[in-house]
Image 1 (spheres, helix red, strand yellow):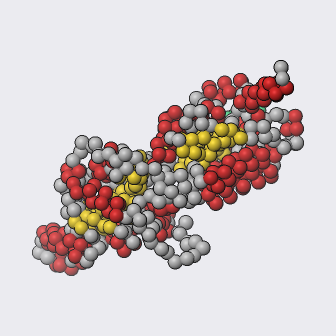
Image 2: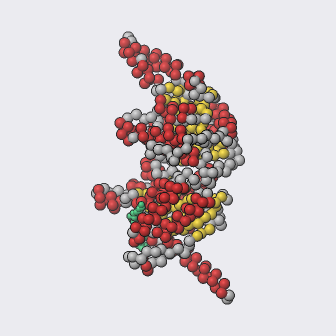
Image 3: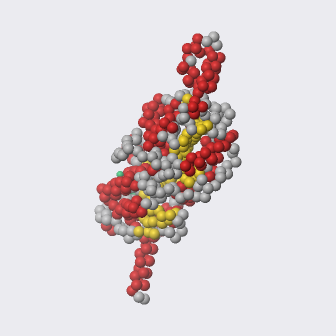
Length: 515
Ligand code: HXC
């Protein structure tokens, strides 16, 4: 055998050893939990045969607590590049079978190297988290590693899409890398995210709680809003990742790849979605599906703050971000959580050249002590800031109610909307007719012989005067009152003419959004 052949065989042996990760027993333990191995996860996400691995032979540098005798294949993380739908991505996956996927300095440096590549080469980065957190034996070296990752997450923010996939524990400070990225995916019974685990909570405050109830997939998809996509299996999660990627540009200097335009296939007639009684709710997603290509709407954060709907669709083949009040939940009001949800999404779209279509039907901000004390002023202001700051094409359609602060906040002309349309069912006013009549006609109502009858007359008077789109249209705040069935065509037209939109802002280091 030639020495080259011998060396090739040796390389293959070395590779095979690393590819076995923590070994058969650890892999069996991983699979018994319904989890795939780190390597199989990467292969399942990327195009077949496209994965190129780097730093396979990196060794950890820990010397204390017996670590000098431990071999950790790949140092517990697999990193590389590959393609999704033929376009390049950077990817890393922590390997729980190797020392619990714990993060030491070399492990972190493998991750930061691939993040640096992604940033320089302008491609999305996908990080799969499955780790016991900072490698305890490495002490401050492990903390340094996390810090270097957080720094890069921040620098890359708004330049390349960053995606985090939580497929196991993500504990302690480790949670802050996903929290700094754009989209977080979780899977039922597999994902766990928390700052302090159940045992610490038990010790410090004496409370008993399971890992699932503390920070399981559902908790983050529904309550905290830390997760953007929830699924029941890893396979379903990988399909979601690929679908999300299909809507995104590769960086902030590009536009998302256009697809073949397709007509909506939704059977619901757009004219019949809004009920005749203005107090009746309906599902605003039916309106979105009636106007987007192929009726294909990919919702983001579906389970969190459901009083606002956000997500991606295509119009004329191009990606559009939708922000829509959901009358079916809390009448579509803006509150702390829905404001955060909308504002962050608007900023994502603005960073990545994705036009925003806003569908409005809401009675304003949610009143109440709970909301005031939770900071609805600060949270609500984020929506105003995000819309005003955004320079991508911004189009609003007022479907029904546009009351008070909500009218202004939901991408009104006054915050810089490029086009504002209203359906004939629109009601644009400072507040709902009942509330308004009770305040401005209080005296007449109180002094009337029949106060109830007078209240009805006065409410109707207010409805006739303001609860329509024509007062706003007479001021040019609405560009056109349109029939529902004209919506898709007018959106396609205005998106087309906005393609070369340029809007400059005064130079500044950065603004101060109400974080
Ligand atoms: C070193 C670790 C480790 C860690 C797990 N392992 N976490 N080794 N450092 N952080 C090792 C275990 O010793 C074990 O090794 C193997 O990984 C598998 O772990 P198990 O405990 O057997 O797995 P499981 O029962 O599934 O429990 C998983 C777990 C638990 C819930 C994640 O391992 C755990 O609680 N780990 C510690 C979590 C934590 O508190 N991390 C530090 C957070 S602080 P053997 O050899 O037995 O197979 C932090 C600070 C970052 O991260 C700050 C950044 C700002």
